[in-house]
Structures are given as C-alpha cells and as structure tokens.
Amino acid sequence: MDRAGDRFFARTAVVAAPFGVWALHFFYSYAAVPVGCRAGWATRDLFGASLLRWALAGGSVLALVAVAALAWQAWRALRAEPLVFSVRVQALAALLGALAVVWTSVPAFVASGCPAG
Image (cartoon, rainbow, N blue to C red):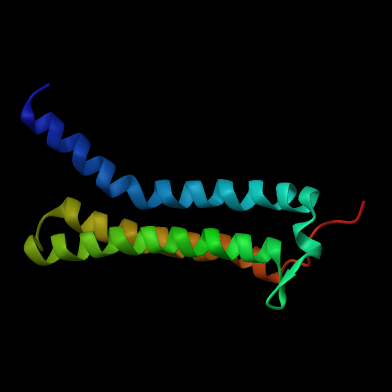
C-alpha cells in the first residue's frame, strides 16, 4: 500500500476513535448491570451509593477521560491545521463521542437498580 493509503487509514482510525470508546462504554454499561445484579453489587453500599452504580460511574468516567484525550488531540490538530476537513471531522467526532458517553450514562443514575426475581 502506498503512503497516501496509510495516511488515509490512520486518519480514519483517529476520526472513528471516539465512537469506538463510546461503543466500548455502551457494551460495558449494558454488560455490567446483569453481572453486577447477579453478584449482588446493587445491595452493597459504598459511600451512600450501591457498588453497581459506582462501577457504572467509574466506567463512564474512564470513557469520558479517553474521549477528552481524543478531544484534546483534535483541538491541537485543529489549531495546527484549521482548514483541513478531516481535522474538523475529528473534532466533531470527539464532541459527539462525549455526548454519546454522557447519554449512555444517564440510565445508570436514574434507574432503580436490579429487577426483582
């Protein structure tokens, strides 16, 4: 593959990275609930909240830190090359990735916990 093709795939990976972080967070959020309910995390309190909520909040914070690092990289690239389209898309993807992580995190804080049964 030529050098231009390598740059294309590298740039595409950088642009898609925030959505990859969101996808991992989405999977973690929906996989941790049944695992945590089965393990009894919803009934164990830690500093006034259930261990399950702390686990979900911790995953959300890690995802937001990762997206913030990608946003910082996008901001630095945007300052260096403000007219390059892929750099603008990278910055927009970082913003949308952060919003997606926050939106996915909302049910963890408003849901009542594990279903009875």
